[in-house]
Length: 337
Image (cartoon, rainbow, N blue to C red):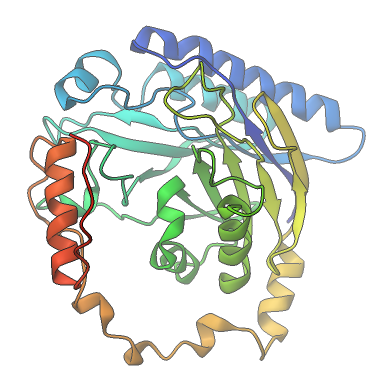
């Protein structure tokens, strides 16, 4: 229960067809092997995390185009490749995101990350809070009849692991749900663009990773996209992948800027358990007066089980406006159409 984790950031060109996914997967599998072998004289690296959009990004403005060009079912030949590497080295891999199609949900695309271990796929996390208005893949929350766990936590030999994707981390409810579900290690799979990176005055990346670790008494392993502006327009990507301990201390962080980078840091599950059992102060989950808070009954982007439909930026804009009207926020802003 003491090992090292690696947050690995990638710097691929933005794909336009699913035929490009295989070469990305092979590169990431190679990076896992190189990291394990390279650090073997010093410690065992057992857990790996990769960024959002490292397989494919929702670059089209139409769901049908995403389905036609980039989306894939899960499992697939790529998840088989990750499983072979996990079995070879006895490690656990939180994949970058796939644009996923599922025959249970025809016409729907999910943004999905998987935890894969030596025995195969252990969990599937589908992004709950899409980055609206631009992202047009669906939230599982919005699908009528959706009956799979939205916030899975998996018990493994290296601890209990939960994950969430990028924008999800700006919602404290998401990470608290994973923590209450038993997570020891929280993995952030992200494509967090400038200016919200690791540099003041807008260092949201570092701010939220440290805050979520401290307020939930969990380790955080956060891997961020590190492509350049020319690779993944219209944004540039700051990287700065990092690992944070359960007190919010940064244990390791990549220098800001684009490019492939690997940062490693120790994960000590025994120390985490000891802290959780010993502490009476700063145990925010234990101290939570849940009945004091009623705001969740008053706000919401879209009701649970609402038909996701054929999402578009204009539909997302309309839903955002409806939510603002309900909460008394109705700024006069010009909207990009």
